[in-house]
Length: 273
Image (tube, rainbow, N blue to C red; front, side, top):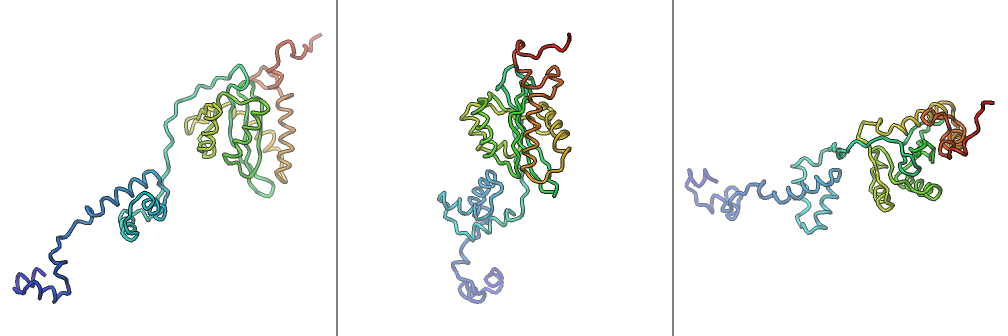
């Protein structure tokens, strides 16, 4: 157009007819697309910053639900220009956690320790265990066994233990997704239970349960070939009884956990004559 109008001296109407351009388009000033799409970019950035795993469909539906009426083709073009249609490997960073002191309480139900373990059946089917102990005397409160143990199952197990032992003041645990779930966190808040998360990569901060896991692994999980989950549960239940009532524990003065909790007058008589 500039050549036809400037060099060839053609009228604007004729020049527009030659190139198939309307006069309105010729007189319209070009607008920077970045400036034009800036509002769409801002909204998409806000959505992705808060919901990094959402795709285009969820983002566009959220925009419509919140009063943004841009055409879906325009939003998709901007979405692609921002390269949001490519796979995104985003991981949420865990908040910095203070180091929790590891001191064994002197009374029961002050602090429980909780952790998961993994193993496989004889035909290679995996299963998990949820181990819960009382830090005051290392007593096993529960070992829940199944192929899947989501946060709802953790809550159900804690509720069952609460009916028998009462709920603790605090629970020491790691940063697994089941233990970080909003459902579990809200349940503990409602019950007045403090969640003492250990620092990431610091299993020694949950040393009581880690030491117990080693014993459970050595004396049960690595000692048998299990045919099914019922067999795992039966052997584990028998072992729990022996561990709590008979097996000496070095940290408890070589007494089993339940005997250690009993008052001195109920302790077994001396074997000396």
